[in-house]
Amino acid sequence: MTLPAPVPDITPETETFWKATATGRLLIQRCAECERCVWYPRFLCPACHSTDLLWTEASGRGTVHSATVTSRGILDYKDAGSYVLALVELDEGPKMLTNVVECDPAEVFIGQRVEVVFHDTGAGVALPRFRPVTEAVAIPGA
Ligand SMILES: [Zn+2]
Image 1 (cartoon, protein in one colour):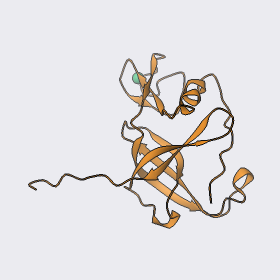
Image 2: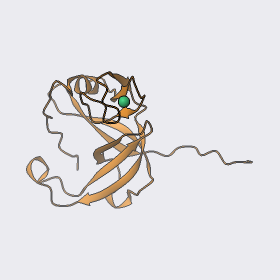
Image 3: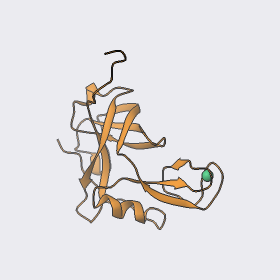
Image 4: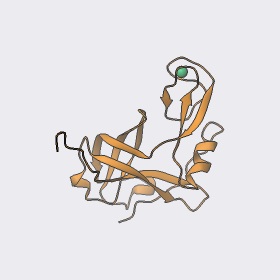
């Protein structure tokens, strides 16, 4: 079953992020002072409190940091069946609360490599979710 894609609440801090999702781009902020990548969108760097946060396009790749299977959704998700709620650590560093899709929920695991996909809400923005990806691994000495 396809997960519902409810329309998010868009605030001044998140508007740039959401507009980019419409074109399939995953934006995060990077602090111009301490160079830390920041997620979720905000006004102040959580590390150094600088207000000089710049938008940058993330690779869209990450690793499952934590995950759980939800079988009793509520609100928009009440008929969604079982789905994965996950914390994905982006390759740039920040962790994003999201869903892992396009796979059997029981097969999602910590350390799994994932890539972003966008689910259209029908309202001009899309929800970033992640799907498993297999990547070529370099074997030392091979
Ligand atoms: Zn900073």
